[in-house]
Image 1 (cartoon, rainbow over the protein chains, first blue to last red):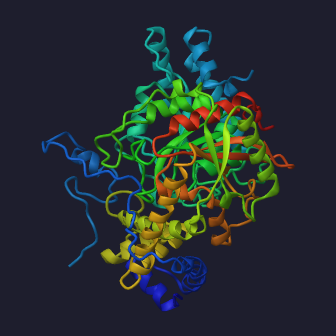
Image 2: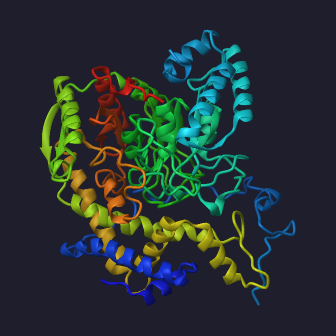
Image 3: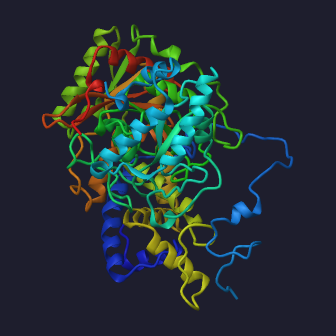
Length: 94
Length: 486
């Protein structure tokens, strides 16, 4: 599969990245070089093979549902680029 | 003997006999850092004042007869692991001033065991890379040859332990990021079984592959660190409840009767002859100690790289979505800029080129229309790779192989060719895909004096077997006692 500069620009938008034309051109070449390598997977017949998403089979561990101490608000906001002491502040959305 | 090159056991004895204080030992290490850092750049942050305060507290515990195995032992932590009150940058501009409000579980365990933390080690940005050249704050140099890469992504940790600017270190390994730099710097490094060490407080790269583990100058030292950091964490749902054995007791087991598998695909064309000679001679030494050698096959090895470079970027693109300029870290807000402008500017200027490449690759692999062809297919082939290992471990107790196809290459040599760079992980990444434990230990040097490592892989939770094999080898070899002329 080949990826076009237009697709690279679209993927950048999905990934919330702003690329200049030089970066888009360079990434198109680099991603194509990498994707060529990936295409060898198509040589393998994997019909009926289940997917591995986790190497170890850990079934979802459960715990008692009770209130426990966690970060307090001041700590959670300590690294905020902008806050009013109660919430994170972001640029106007609407 | 220089204090900074003592073994942990030697330091422990001097500390416990009160012939050396933890403060004196920490001062010696801080002096070593000051002398070596201008050439190495293994640390991103040195926490000298805190280290001396922790050392003073350690001295009190020792005086009270309450010392644990690591009380007063100075160490460094990879800068992808959260440390309360100490900035944790992931070697990225986007987290340059991020100060975590909590300790990673493994850091809390080490602190409770009395570790003195010297600072935070340099790495490839967000642990993505094989040479530490992707650090936004400049590369680390290899202490054996300053022109050479230290390996990556935990290059600062490996270089620092080799240079004596830390007794041990904790790094992370997603596709070889502990084992490959350990090999290139001539130290011991272990990636434990997935789930053996808590991931809480590791800044996530690829959640199904990431695992933290120790670096040390000997297998015996490494066992001490593993003993402390291993174990179930109720706050990490992927951490394993399997009981932690006594790793020190495993050291003396020897290799008599153990079957060691040599995967023929790992000794194929492309392997540097000097690496092959050193690795085969280490394997012969193990045979001399009573191990039995068997040739085995991992038929899907050739597909590991492609599977890895779909799954790891896919998970990375999802994990790194959290860096958005809202909650912490870099936030670029143009006047009258929209929320979208903030996301775009912050991420584009905060991430370096390799991180952008992987986020792009992963986003593409997960995007509508391509998901089945890439991520779906990679997950299926991952199953085939896992089954290869299950099959092989019916024929042998552990696998022995090279760690990397060549000794450390020169800084700058591969920076412009991502695929060539990715190929340096070819022998290490399948271990992560299968969730296995793997260890790298020194087994020789190239003609130009660069270290070479032996890799030992085992079935899930076979850390004891790896330690036994490694310790037996270090009993009959001296590569791990060589020190760089730095």
